[in-house]
Length: 583
Ligand code: ARG
Image (cartoon, rainbow, N blue to C red; front, top):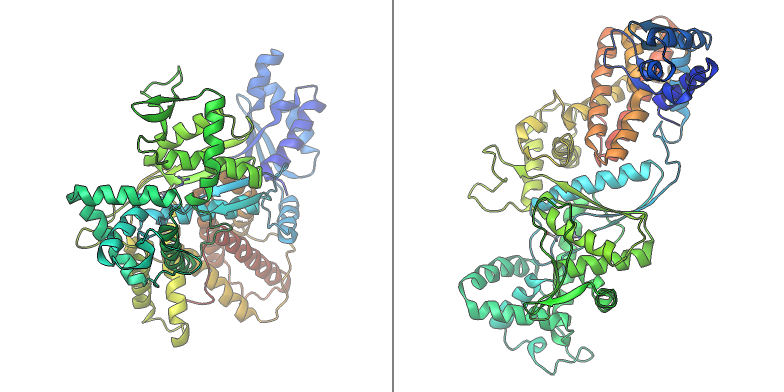
């Protein structure tokens, strides 16, 4: 289905044409004054200049045609030339029924479906997953589901940081601790020799230790750099050890992401781009883009219109190792080869914007993708603590994602302890779902580019714009349905104002989705879900659904409640939020 304003725009445009005016004047938008009308069209003002006629007269001509359409309860002209529109109940009901029967739940489908690669998650192997990676996972997952729900083909790629200095640090440290492991010997033979199994605990402990050590000890730092370089050059013992590090690390990452209900189609890492680096270097050289500067190989990416200095991008360091930008450029070659995407979206901390500007410009100059392929950086802000500084553990350290999940689950368990609704055996599962709903909604309700304050008490509140409020609304509808048993449910009319308001919200859902998709901003989906819940609440409080004696009315109200639930659940699903039966 198309968004309702698009359907109305087509009708109003035809009316403009019928009166001899340009159809383009017929753009319809949602009204911001619901007390006056539901929709409006301001085309008569533009028309006035074009036709040298008072806007009022143009609007009157058009309104007269629209009144004949039989879909408006009011098509009014307000001086000096506003066209205010309100749908009649019959037409509202028709659209609501269409949404009820639509397999996409009223979400507008892309006219030209696109292939989109979303690069999100971005965890680093061997380093613990910390809360900095939480936003990328939550926002990226929501964008993936949103783009898919709009009919596009979407691939989510975790883009593991599995090839950088952190691995060299871990290798160097393990070498110092366990010098007699075979993998550190020159003659290591992967056919015959093996690497000892690493424990997740050891891996967790080694990286922070080695990272600290490298800051205090120049020798050790040099060793880690050498190890990184040798790994990247394919030293067999290091490759074998690296594979073991990957095995342990990825298992841990997968378990954390599955707790978040975040799931990737591809688990590619930076290392998978490695084989495209020679091709990248050749393209840069053939196109005469790369040149030597202080021993490194760089590409200029500055443009005349730049207001701030734009440093050249380094594609190879003086020690011959390749770096972050090189990997991202090579990954673009890989994605173009594997997916031929129309768009690649990068859901990454906004502090990396300069890096991506450099990478994209270099990719354009080198023509790594066709000119029409969109490369877009979707930067996100920081999750702060109540003190306004990046969220930390009590003792000031970086919070691990697994600890955060635990904290949140514990907080919801505490709340559930007093709930009479939730059976003992469901508590764990409920606690996880409630916790995730609180955290995800608390994040996604903010425009992704903004910083926000992580306030668990606020996020867990059953009132206001929270995930809990939405789960609560769904569970309330569940209990209405349970009470209704097999009572008839069928939309057959509009009986009260609260109902009309709720239906309008349902009708406007298509608009919210197309806006969210255009802006790549899941916060519009959150906002719309919240609006639906508020309107439902009003409808529920003003009408006694279960106790209603009029059969037809009751049937219509039950159907409306059911549809509201379906639409809200769809919103939540796109946000990556699971609902619970009862709470
Ligand atoms: N691993 C990186 C980090 O932790 C994020 C990766 C983002 N994606 C990318 N294509 N560079 O900062």
